[in-house]
Length: 70
Figure 1 (tube, rainbow, N blue to C red):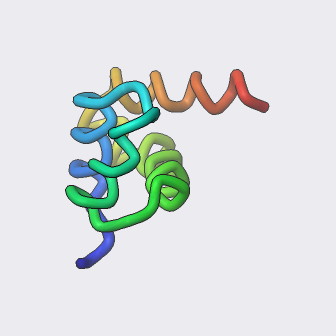
Figure 2 (spheres, helix red, strand yellow; figure 1 turned 90 degrees about the vertical axis):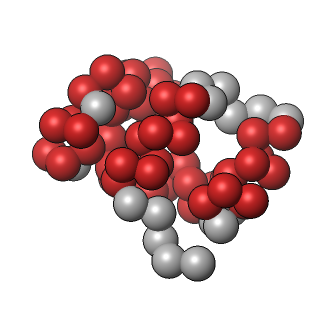
């Protein structure tokens, strides 16, 4: 399966804002990647101009989440 697009990543993040439990299995099934890779790609998507233009609310929520963890 090819790497998920920015839109796919942000749509998934918007539909599943909490990555726990069964969501990890859903990431693997729906996106074809591991949860760790999903987090990496989601951060890249959220900080990109394309991602912020596509879904600014989800993109900024994910940016704020990573800033809290730093």
